[in-house]
Amino acid sequence: MCVNLSKKESLAGCMVRYVGGSVLRRYGLCTVDLRKPICFEAPWFYVRVGRCIRQNGLESVSAESWCERKRVLSLLDAKEEMEGVDGLTFDASKTVWKNVCKKELTNRQKDLAWMCVKSCLPTRVFQRRRNLINNEQCPRETCGGTEHIPHIFWECGYAKEVWSRLKNLIKGLTDVECLTYEMVMFGLCGLNHDKARVLWFLVNCVKETLWDSRNLYVFKQCEINVNDCIGLIWARLFLYVISDKRKLGYDAEGIWKTKKMEIMDFFLMSFCFFHVLFKDYENFV
Image (tube, rainbow, N blue to C red):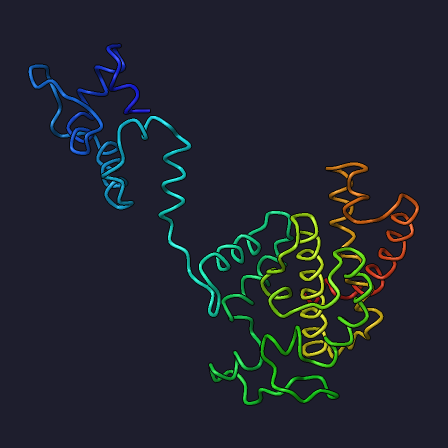
């Protein structure tokens, strides 16, 4: 805006050249006629404009580019630093962070996905490394493996049983016959937009439920069997079905492959599971 105004001969343009001309001309964004009055001690907000240009390395951007807001924003996005994910390329890491920050996810699922990518989920291995506990063993009596992130969501016998029971649902919604670790943890699947979106919602519902069932088992000594765990996953997934139904109308039936009567049955079943299993869960969270 300042660059645009500085090119005009209006009162506003004269004021911009007078007040901010000393800053803008350093970067070739304004032509100042030294035969006219100019303020060499620019106000703080113009000083911050110059600091922003330097910090973001935008000194070489032309004045014409500064006049286009979208062009400036694209330059800033391109220069934004991004933390890479171990073992993934730059493009794959960018996709992972977009998936983690997807607005449609619930806040708890965003937090869980972020902690999984950053490897800071408070598993027993994580706590043992910080001398908080003395045992890395999975708390489930029938397992006995080392409890790290891949174990909770992928390797544990309980998790394997849950994924096995969801195989038909996953195939029906996304046409994915064999899940991979990258699909579950990062959402890297190579599907089209709608199917990738549905798969990401589904795996996050599963991960959230697996993590909650683990915490209930550890802190409340309350063991959720696989059938009830599946019911919770369906209940959470149905919230996304309702959301799409409100936004897209009948188009949501094509995405979720459900009809009106099936959705009502799905809702009633999911509500029953959700009500019964989370009757005491509010005190835990």
